[in-house]
Image 1: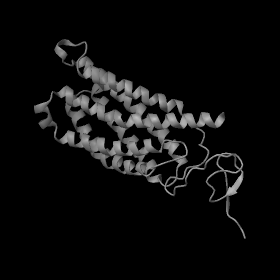
Image 2 (image 1 turned 90 degrees about the vertical axis):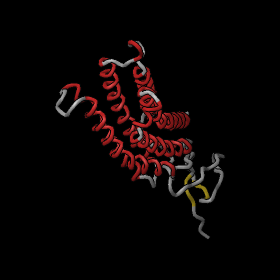
Image 3 (image 1 turned 45 degrees about the vertical axis):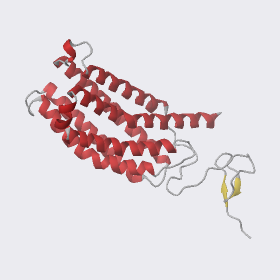
Image 4 (image 1 turned 180 degrees about the horizontal axis):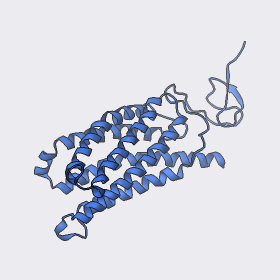
Length: 252
């Protein structure tokens, strides 16, 4: 009688297709999953760079929060110089965010069944680039598109209207990755939840801004938005950290 076989993902020796433990190398085999059956060997990629990108994004965002509260300014009021500094820093952070998304896009090619979520990362990146351009445009061409504050407000409304459905769809795609042989499956699920929740909260915050400003100061509301922004970044950092650890363990 013919017995179906497969190759062990660790030693590549032939074993029974229903085997739980490899008879050759003694390794326990990962459970297969139709949605997220990843390749056994990660495609070549430097995981250190995106890991440090997440740390840079978090650091820049913390600086933006501190500047928003007016550290080093009179009476805690952000002056025009600080406002320009925040705009430039936010644009730089957005470019790093696009770089990070493209790194995540490349990493997701190791997984099956989430192609739509992976491809939507490109759409989200294009939205971030367009938002950054609109945000910094008034600094070089003042008054062309209106006042700097009006342009920023309109760009925020357009960006959140564009990114909300994309972020939700991507989030549901990531939530389908419940486990994987690298070990970052739980972080993918947390990333999916965080993308959905933070996008909805930010969208709600945007349309309830006047009500919030009656309770909290503008700086507090802006700082809260920054905090929501970096929550998913922490989970992406953990994903790339575990991918790097996996690659190192495979070489040792």
